[in-house]
Amino acid sequence: MDESKIISAVKQQYEALPYPPRNPDDEKSRLLRTVGDSLSELNHCCFKGQRNFDRDFRCLVAGGGTGDSVIYLAEQLRGTSAEIVYLDMSKASRSIAEQRSAVRGLNNITWLTESLLSIPELGIGKFDYINCSGVLHHLSDPVEGARALASALKDDGAMYLMVYAEYGRHAVYLMQTLFRELIPQHLSIQEKVNMARRIIGSLPVHHAFIKDLDKWANEITASGYGDSGLYDLLLHSVDRCYNVNEIYELAAAADLKLVTFLGSSKRYYDPAHLVADENIRLAWHGKSLQQQQSIAEKLFSNHIKHQCYLSRQAACTATLDDEDNAIMLEHELANQNMAIHEAIKPGETLSITFTINNEKTVFQLSGNKVNKACFRYMDGKTPISSIIRKVKMKCGDSEQKIRSELRSIFETLFPMGCIYLQRP
Image 1 (spheres, rainbow, N blue to C red):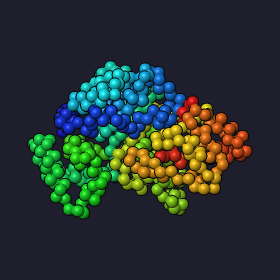
Image 2 (image 1 turned 45 degrees about the horizontal axis):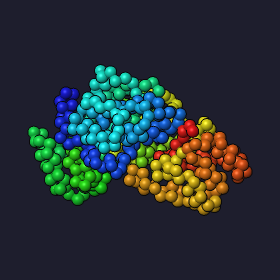
Image 3 (image 1 turned 135 degrees about the vertical axis):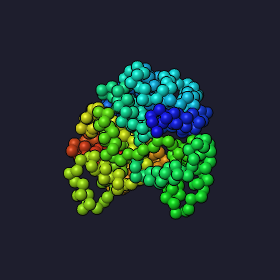
């Protein structure tokens, strides 16, 4: 299928079945958080924690769909001089996103109905941040799409990218192949959906998709994304997947570097989180970060998508070594530093259960007087240098010991997406 036919088929799909389905009235009662779009995470990972988002920050949401990312970004940037540009070729999807924006009273979004492949000709300028979630893997030439996005990125800007992962979607691609063989292509979108549901209902209980059904239930059931989700998952006209090495290749083709993987499963890009046997750990000793991540995805084998930041900058992530940074807790742990400080009992293990992206996670900390004192000042305002000085005065421990405890806390919580660094 040539590019024009692919674009036509994809556009037809999202005009008929905007994805993901959203009810604009829901904006009255909740704000959906989207991976990659948290300004705290973005600042830490891509701007060394030093970005001021209040002044002329420009965002492009390329493939904005029904508006999840554009709404979350616009809400965080409400009251600033920031501009968020929404771009999508589906008028039906844009209409839903605009309605959601209107319910929230947002006025910092510019709306464009275009393909991201048209970016170089649109004259929309350069952006500090580009979000492209779930789009490149639906193009016949994803590299062309990545280069079009990169052409609109400032030299010190950052891009969030989500593409499908290879190993965790095995059953999905099995079903896509089955449907191509069983479902006539001349049928209407709704007829294809109806036939697909009949086929799913006829699958034997041992089928790989049925055994994995809980993973996809929200996508295909009436209580989840319904027909829109089913078509997007199993009947899409173009759908390719990536492994870790291919992500690096895609980034390099657009002259970008992979900064870090994101999402609730990001700790599983580190093989050390998957293997406890020290003898096996020696097998990847000395390998590059990319090689270790490639090993980890095969050990985990359950990533259904890859989410990552890309940048032109080789070193754009905040570090504990820059002691002008402050430490802040995020998501369910936000503003909980004093509560954790009070809960820590030296000599005892503290367990805190919290939920990120519908996944329950347990944070365990062996309490001592130093980490108890550290949490008191992890408020996003107190520089690390001041934390060290204050804790030293209170506990009498060496600066080396305090730095070691701060690093231990950070390395425990950062893979869970619950702690970041920023300039006060």
